[in-house]
Every structure is written in structure tokens, then in C-alpha cells.
Length: 633
Image (tube, rainbow, N blue to C red; front, top):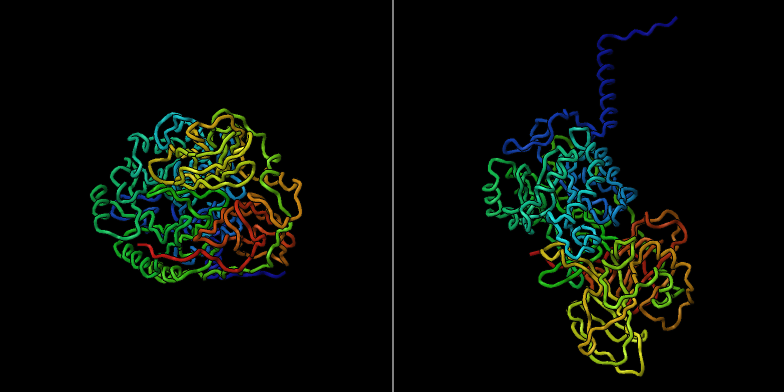
């Protein structure tokens, strides 16, 4: 018989080891960021001039990363890079428009699996500040509000108008119960929740912010509440029971003085420190010099403030999700949301990242994790477009057209299960018996290509008010292909963001009547049907607008790449049915990011909708092209 004897000192060591392993497993099981053995009785608090978490001093070093702008397969990669930079808190918006594309229809799976995203953040070791709106801005179409709200002609967004509050309550009934178990005091990563976003710059209803607060509290949100405003909105954006935070890019004494005046003896947090900026079509690509950016971050930390970098990693406005600006004039936002952030659109490190990592390492007692390796980018053989389908030949594959005596805006069309058209193009056709002056009357939102008997005659750009229609014999078909280029994401005209033909248009000062209206939203169901259309071998002179079809061959495991379309004009690219977003020769962006997870090993379908002209060859290269740059002033 063999007897094993363990000395008392060894027993103590084994007991400690066992408790450590058990604690680690328990932390993982309940969703704790590993290595944080904190009491969950007291969450993030603001009882003094500094934050405390579980009763201990805590400084938020945060970064914004949006799950809806990053392929799900890359969520963990981006989070690990945040962690390696010294970020301890992830912030994310929740885009209502994506989660509820129709009344009664909710999406919280695949790319929109918010619970999986937040649990992954906990696994990586990141706390979370959740920003569930209902309005989020974020350069999204209508600031992240669903466009079907605008079917109500009396709608007053971001107010206590019953049509809006009822819709918010319905959405929160689905969203908030998913978030409650993920709060800090319940073992999850959420340490704070933001109410709305920059409401002080809108501020049309004194009761609205309290409504949002109560909507969250009544459903079980119990962590620290925040508001977020720029200097102009600080005074009017607050609400009792929520900590005010500020958004800025340059640190100014007057900003801090105002915040201290409105909120004395409270910790200061820069909720959005803008690491770069977004770009509009026709602009230059905005950049913020790394040294200038880090100098401000350094000073914010030196003064004892907390900070959230907006954006830490921008990602991509896939599909038609990008919004538009209204001032000084209407301008749509580009597809890339690179933002000149510390991580590029495809997740690569930048000089900003390295400078921040060096700075943040001084605020950590332990060595930062190793930086994850960057992902390989690859150029592929060009896809030669070999089949073509004109816009006119694609119409039978759309939903049945709608007849109306007068124009009907996109949101009020009887499509999408009664929710109206969300994005894309709308084709309006009517009969005319003469030529003359076609006047928009500011009724075209946002851009229209005009045809007579399918022959191109001109374009109504954003400011175009008049177009000449040539004379002809007999009745002819006048067609207007109207594009929603993006609803405004910020400002006081949100209620006015209906798209398509929103009012009458006039030929020789007489309003046109008797329209046939086609919804060309380019949604996945239509794209699937389109593959069954009678495609033709590519003619020598293909007609546009139209669809072109080609194939990309990937040998082995797919890598990230960039789609470049020299010789093309304006349109939308689909890879294996996935809408990558808009391209437009006016720039600044000259390449669309194509993540490897969107590709298959072997054959991949390349589908392009082009409005005007095409080279009929699509390039795939290993580097981005965001255009000529301009420094942010």
C-alpha cells in the first residue's frame, strides 16, 4: 500500500492554487472580466470628484467600437487591440433602425447580437458604457431612428409626442430586458448607461429626457446614468439623476468652467473625445495629426478626468446606413467610417495607436497585453463583368408597382409590410405630351436621374431646380430615378427627412399627375430574385442605370481586400449578396473595404449597380484609398 503525504506548507499552496483556479472559472462563468475580483454591491459612483467602482477609485479610459460597423468575426480582434492599448471600457451605440426595421419585427441575432457582443467584451476584460438612444446620431441615417416613424405626417421625433414615445416603449420592451442581466451589479460588464445623445443641441421638449430616463429605470436599468453634450448643449441636455459629460476635440477652459458650474464637485468625463472626423461625398478626407490628438488626451488625463475616445475604431457604414449633414448645405456621408481613428477601417495600427499605448501604459500598474498581430490584406485578380441587366429589365423582379395620382414619398409607399421604403432608390414614371421646363420645386430628395422614353436627359442634383425636357411627338414616358442619399443624422430638421418625391414637380408650371412608382430598395430578397433575371452577355455599349455581374476567384482562405472601380461613376457594390455600400467618383473615398469573412474560398459573385457609366472591370487591391487629406481645424 502506497501512502502519499503532503506537508502542511504544500497543502496551503495547493489550497491557494485551487482557490485561484476556482475564482478564475467563476469569474468567467458569471461574465466578469477575468482577473477582477470586485464586489458587485456598488457600481460606478460619482459621490466625489472622482469615479469609484465597487468603492475603489476608478478612471474610465474608454474607446468607442460599434458592433454594427465591424464584421462579427472581427469583434474579438478589435477588442483585444483595445485592451492592448490600455483601454478599460468599451462604449457602443445601439442603432434602433437596424434592430427594428419594421414595426413588430426585431433583429438581435448574427451581426446584431448585442448580448453576444457585450459578453465578449466581458470575456476580453472590458467594462461597457451602453448608449441605447433612442436617438444616437453617429452619422447614421436619421441618427439611428427607424424611417418608418416618418409615415406619421405629424411625427415629432425626440419629443414626448405619443406616436414617438409609444414606439420607443415598444423597442425598449424588447431591448432593455436583454441588457438588465448584463449590468455590473448583476455580474455583467455594463457600468453605465447613457440617456439619448446630445439632446441639449436639439432641446425642443423639456419633458423628453425625463421620459427616456424613466423608460430605462422602469425596465430595470440600475447603473449610473449619463448624458452627453457638446459645449452648446451642456446647459439644456442634462436631467436630474444623470451625470453630465462633455464632447469635444480641443480642450478649452470655457468648456470645463461651464461643466463645473453646472455640475460642481463631480468627476469630469469627456464622453466623446473626437480622434478624427467623418467625411462627406465631395469633401477631402479629414485627418487629425497624431501629436495634436495625443497632446489633448495627455492633458485630459493629467487633469484627472476620465475619457472615451470617439472613435477608437470606426469601421464601415455597410449598406445604406450612412447619414448626411444639413449645414451649411445637404451633403451625404461616405461609406467608410475610418474616422482617422487609432485603428484603421480594416483594424490596422496607426501612429495614434502607438502613441496612446505608450501614454495609457503609465496609468496601469501592470504591463499591457501584447499587441495582436495584424491581419493580412490581399489583392486579387480583377473581376471582369460578363453579364448585364438594364434597370428597365430588372423592374419585373421588384415588388408590384404602386399607382398614385400624386407623388408619394419613400416612407409612405405601401411596401415593406406597411412600413414604407427604408433606403435605396425609387422610380417614378408618368406620361407627358410635350417638352419644356421641368422644375423640382425643392421636392426631390435627394438626387434624381431623369429619362424620357428610357433615354437619359439629365440629373437633378441636390440644388438643381430646373431641367429642360426635349420636345417630341405624342405621349412619352417621363421617368425619375430618385435616390435617398442618406437622411440627415444631426440637427433640427429630423422631422423633415422624408425621401423620394415629397411634393409635386412641375412641367411648364403644371403639376405632374398619374404616377407609377417602383420601390428599388436593393434589399437582399430583391438581390436574390435578380440572379434569376434574363441576364444578357455584356453588350459593347451597355445601358445605364443597370446591373453588371462578374466573379471573383479566391484561392484558399479569404483575406481582407479593397474594391476599386476606376472608370465607374456612381453606384452600389454587392459581394455574395452583401451590400458593401455606395461608391462615387467624386470621392474622397476611392475604395470600398471588403472584409475576408464576406468572401468564400473559390467563386464569389460580384454584382454592381451603376447609375451612369462603367469600365466593366472591378479591381481588388490590398490597400485602402480614402482620398486626398485635409487637416481638421
